[in-house]
Image: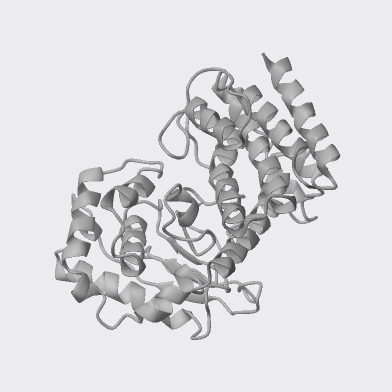
Length: 372
């Protein structure tokens, strides 16, 4: 059963678009975020990813907290650009309508104004949100991706769109993407494409992109994992919730599962970045441990029957793929096999702390067996 995250923690439908598009390498993690309504008085800056640009597509504007901005000191740039829905239809999907084209162009130009000329993807991410984070947000995210990756397949955009909870209209979204592709010259007019490329894709050097991705994923896990897994691997890895966040620990089992489902793609982004940079020791272990923590929580749910994962398959299929990734023994596709594979992979890693890491994994594997 899918359920919205607690409003104290992540906004409804929050996700990192780069991680959402995996396994295709379309966008680095930590560059573009999307979600439903963000309450800037409630949602903590660290929890929503420390954006340098927030795009609000709702009719209502929001007050921006004083001192809000990216970790690098870049002040927050707030873009408010609403589009009215006609009765019975979402105008935002009609990308052949001149009103919609003007709206898309206005949003993109507003984002460009908030990106520093010297930013090469090292500042905070861009966060796009509307009320539910699927319709207006879906069209603008598709436009941003088509702006910097005009060759991206429609199927990849659809896969990201379908990850949203709520009532979806895939045919309407497909028409919107088709309209964006056919009218690209119109809605990109006046948009600083070079600036947007630097902000969303980072520097030309692959190493720089990997570092930025790993930093974003590490920071996100350090904030969120202790709130979902306070007494497990998060504590063993030295991750502790800040004092002002400890009261936000998630105790509801169903909500923990949902949050781990959202965290899992981030661990995949970290692993992908590590693979690119050739880091197979310390950094990789951290993401593998975090991944195991998510699998443990999701695994308990999977034991009760198949559940959809972030990519549209079942958790069992995803766990089987993880066993192959870690070159561990092929098991029955359960979380126990995945953790056993992780333990064996860590045992052979060149890492001084590997004994402690292996102990963590074995402890959680035993807990999974006990759950049977």
